[in-house]
Length: 275
Image (cartoon, rainbow, N blue to C red; front, top):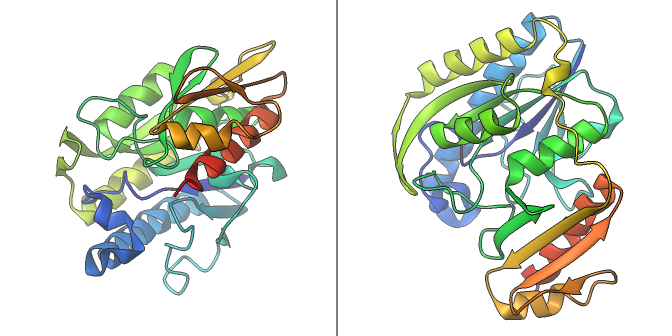
């Protein structure tokens, strides 16, 4: 059994501020990356105990160099650094039996969710696929599903758990904190959080879970990206195939979801280039 892990930081127990996810955040960031690494190790150990022959971990937050290599379980393989074509789920197309999404957060606009955003919070105001709002969990899970990989487990706050339940009701969720606002929560301590994550991984890997494969909608796909500012949309609209919808929104259409996913990444990168 080959297990894929996509690891973010905003959903880690104890993390509640953007400073904790920013390399410029000093000791707050250093503490958060240690907590992130510990949660990944707890999941990896549980996966190996459940019979995994390989665990590949993708460092999926911000600079993509957050996980402490010298502390990680030596049995895992780590995908680190950027840019990566498939971003938070790079490598998921290489043949895996199950995926775990650790430290994830809710989509933009979710009330009282810890650090809700999509990919780049200073650039993306909203993402919609065929009219339905999505965040990182939904789009990343659909990309995994495009390659037949089920997302069998996720961890994060209670608002992320509600989002997962909407999209993949059979997916195990380890709730490690309960949001009381965008930058405040009641959280488990690191030890209990690791136990909660390991237990969820153990349950999730007990058997095949075809019901945890999130397939993209059939037919032509329409991706709408609403940017934070008009100048970001100005730049994104330069991309061939992009359609300007209004002052802050750009659309891209295609039949192939991996193509749509990559276009989403390109649109955001162009928007991010705005001064």
